[in-house]
Length: 377
Image 1 (cartoon, rainbow, N blue to C red):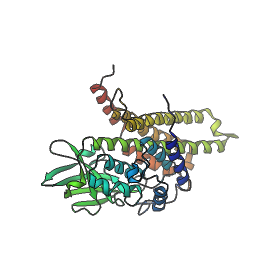
Image 2 (tube, rainbow, N blue to C red):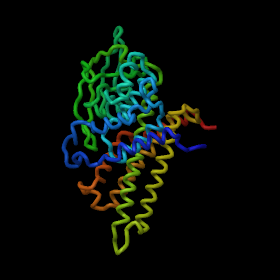
Image 3 (cartoon, one colour):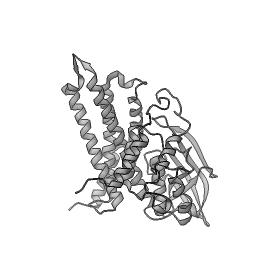
Image 4 (cartoon, rainbow, N blue to C red):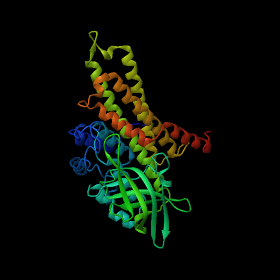
């Protein structure tokens, strides 16, 4: 096995490090002190920098001005973004554009991917269903009405909903198939209601009431939603990994400088053991992330479908990122809760990522179902 990243993937990661180098995690008001959203919109200046560095078009083919890279490259960039809590819809925009490129009709391909890759359009995805716990594709119905589609239902916690020009909404048909609806911001019958993340970002509850879309704005290709869902989940695991690595590094620096009884507390066995446990968590998160990203990118066969590798990555990411930030808060003591110190922001973002991934028990159940359906020899 060769776990080495390609030159192109490494170049994407290096470019991301350069773009994110000047980003401050505390550039907006603290979510702990802000009753609503910490900002009216995402970091538009950073968005422009990402577009200039061709990091918004990583997954797009050359015909759309992209680099033609894969999910591994995107995850490397997302990992860097999470280390500085970059406030941009990089994951959602990249995944949605790639889904349209891969599964969309010719009109959708001509209208969206290239512009999204240049940062001219912002795309997002409604992937949390009605409550955040039920399958997203069951929260909205889609029915044919002549040449058009009519959508009804509710999607909760849509990230960057108020900033997006187009929201990709999974919906189920009467025959049980899942389609992807490309819902523009000003769509008749689409209403947004404000929601707020633990990180202080503004989310949106998207309510669709007989929203009528032309056939060109609905992707009905088989496997489109499953592919997009797995890519979003794997990208979220990459965000959790980057955040966790930054938090553990902050903790190492702090415990190396903080002294008790004349010695750095990092030299105390109880502290070292806790930090070591969290390091093991991060390495497990990393290994399972790259396995899932590789399965999505390569399409390589395995004992289980790629969804099994994604489920394992989600289990480790959801549990691991929570344990990392909790241990960091504990080892920082009261200093970790100081709103003038950035650790509490990482804790809030980690909770948002954990909630986005969903409980580990649900992924374990999904993995069990896959193992039952595909018994290992």
